[in-house]
Length: 126
Image (cartoon, rainbow, N blue to C red):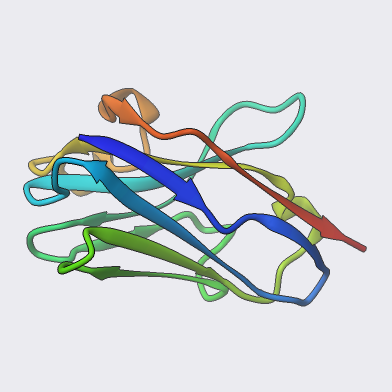
């Protein structure tokens, strides 16, 4: 499967953005789709994930209550709605696909995701 992330941009603190991750080749069926982000000089960080078949969701504590994941099966697209954005949310956001069998405790490890899309830059100004 190939993934295409889009929707990044510049937003003021407190604002919202909605990122999209589309399957440009293949389908997301049977995969776990995750969002990760990497800020300059920092390690890659888990944001959220969803099992495409079953819909089980997982969020990082730093975004829980502010970010929401949804999906459109017909479009093979996953969305990341980001609300109440903070300057510390500034990063390049990547979506990735891993096995649909990932257990909850494994969802946050980037090593479990084998297919990665290009990133989309989110910049939150203070």
